[in-house]
Length: 219
Ligand SMILES: NC(=O)c1ccc[n+]([C@@H]2O[C@H](COP(=O)([O-])OP(=O)(O)OC[C@H]3O[C@@H](n4cnc5c(N)ncnc54)[C@H](OP(=O)(O)O)[C@@H]3O)[C@@H](O)[C@H]2O)c1
Image 1 (cartoon, protein in one colour):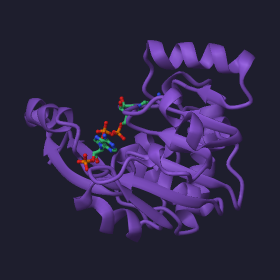
Image 2: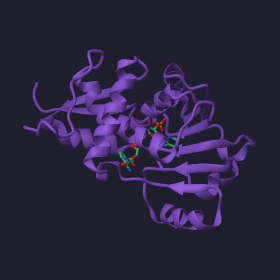
Image 3: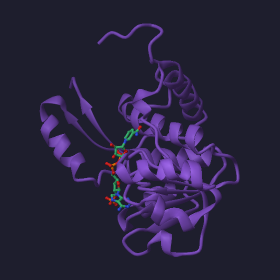
């Protein structure tokens, strides 16, 4: 594969393997876009990450900590230790507790898996809080339109892959700085050779991967 010199490419940081870098180009860049561009993340803010154990979630926990946020991670029992190791300050096990039913509030709720909605999360947002999700559906579209006019709390979405090239390059540069500072590491679940593409899709489609699944075109 050839890529133009001015394309969206960067040198592989010394502290990252090729497999980790592959995952980082999805979860890392997407979560950086959501936390920085949509969530306007700042030190001291309270951020809740729903789906903290996926590709976007594992990157988001670490990126939010890098920016000095107080991070609450929502995952299932088997992933509690992992998200704590990634830096989460608080963990909520979604199989045992519904975070929308307690009195805690957050400046940003980043619903990486889109299993909740703005309506469900509204009470859990601070006065000017943001609900952001990368999973687009009619309810989120409606909530984005309504909240942009009628509420101080906002619902947001972005298609990271459709960002202008210049912005994607900027995000990649920012991500490299975080990687080189040692503040984010890739989480790899498993890798498949290209011939097992179907098996890889079947596994990912079950919706329970930890971090990233990588396809290896060669060897
Ligand atoms: N808009 C964009 O720019 C953009 C970019 C990239 C990806 N995406 C989308 O973002 C979504 C997330 O992708 P992903 O690769 O990070 O993850 P994923 O494969 O969709 O999700 C896997 C993780 O979600 C957790 N999970 C499943 N049900 C949950 C629930 N009810 N509550 C909390 N966590 C739950 C699973 O943990 P358990 O096994 O413990 O359940 C697993 O670790 C996908 O829909 C993808 O298409 C959007």
